[in-house]
Image (cartoon, rainbow, N blue to C red):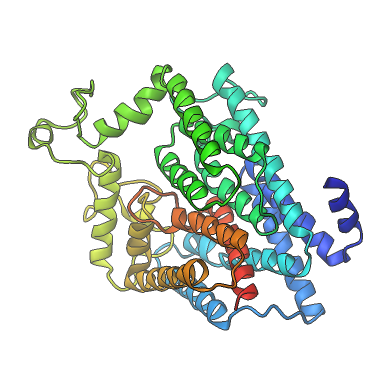
Length: 432
């Protein structure tokens, strides 16, 4: 397989090879931190724009998609110009379009360079295996191969102080399988074993939201996948998960983080847990009021919603939550952070009703196409249908509003959030 890929890559056009190389470097450098992947992403977008203009290429992307993103990015920039800290807000909005263009670059390669699918898959597998190997070493020894340690009940792997290894695996794994099913039908034992190992690692990472998302991915993966001996593999997978999670629960910090802290933080004590007595004030404990995820999360949410009520139409501006949360009108004991840790509330607080309209239009468009691809369009190949469903797992993680989330305008997060869009654009074009 690797020899075939090498030969076809060697025979490819120079512009295809350069774009492929740059795109793969973005993926391979992701664990190093935000600088390198963002740098190579920007270079790939500039190079793509150069060859697009020079060779007068045609992409055949639906105009409605382009128009939507042009209007959205224009609004982000315009809103930044009317904030109290123009330069800071513009830093995130002015070139935010580069992530969409990177998706278009991936779409272009998928469409024009057939071997790119295999190259992209192999690249993603390589970096996944590396991150998994490195993080397991950290779990068992306390330090990864770079000497990075981790706090109790959390893992960071090669991401050092950034505790995002669980969310990274939860996003990149569905994308990896989506790419695989874009050109293959049958799974291998290696892929199933890797899925099992990653699933346990996401649990061990201590990232509860990521474990929730990954569990949904695993459920969809087995229910809708038509591979041979599905019942047998599913049973083996289920037994393995139970055994491995049972072993994981023997580590007290993991058990406390994933079970006790989850319920205690929400003031739920159905299981007679040993919740700290000073977790909440006495009135909250007596009222049995359920806290939204935690007092910290609830504080962020209240502050964000108050901002929205005061700035209903346009919000306070991109990335401006951090500067407004300390305002007496929005302030509470837990109001401040860099973002409100909820995608929808961040959109409401920072972009207002106009931002909400963009959000709803995009979600409605995605749902409409999901129904068409999965249930209506009979021309869609079985393996492509599975690939599309896995793309939607990635979209679900980005747009789901009933769970905590990362910073919507964060460059680092945006890279993994926009990559599946390139494959989605490919299918839109393929089955239009």
